[in-house]
Image (cartoon, rainbow, N blue to C red; front, top):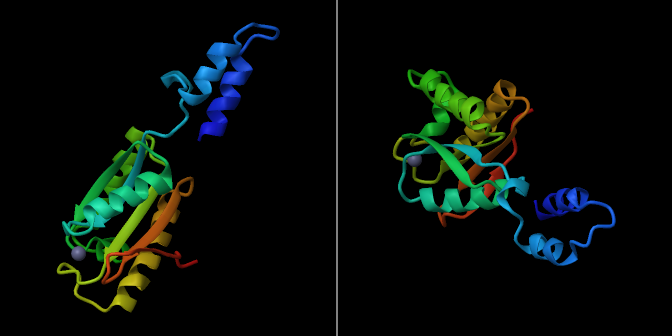
Length: 162
Ligand SMILES: [Zn+2]
C-alpha cells in the first residue's frame, strides 16, 4: 500500500520544514516503521506439492502480505466444507494465524486431480464455495477467498456460497 505509506510520511513532515530531499527519498524507500503492509495472510490448502509455489505466489501478490501461514491436509477443502475428524484441528490452526499473527486474509484452495479428495471438478468447486462461506462466518472481519487450480494449474477464484 504505497499510497498509504506516502500519506503517513507526508503527515509526519513538520509544516514549513525543509525535509524535501529526505522526504522524496522516503517515498521510494519508506522506512520500516512507516510500512503498513500486513505481515501475515493464511491459506488452507491441500498438501499436494504441485500447487504450493503457485498458490503461495498468487496469495502474496493478491493479499499484499509478507508471509503466508500455511495449513495443509490431503484434500483440505472437504475438511472445511464438511465436518470430519480433522476439521477442528484445521480450524484451530487457522485461529492461531488470525489471533496470534493478525492475519485478516484467508484463502481455501482445492485443485484438479486431488488424491486426497477424488471427486469431480464441479463438486470440488462447490466445496470451495461452501468452505469459504464457513470461514467467513468464523472470521467475519477477514477477507476470505476461494481458489481452484485446474488441469493447467491455472489459479481461478471461486465465489463463496451466500
Ligand atoms: Zn489434493
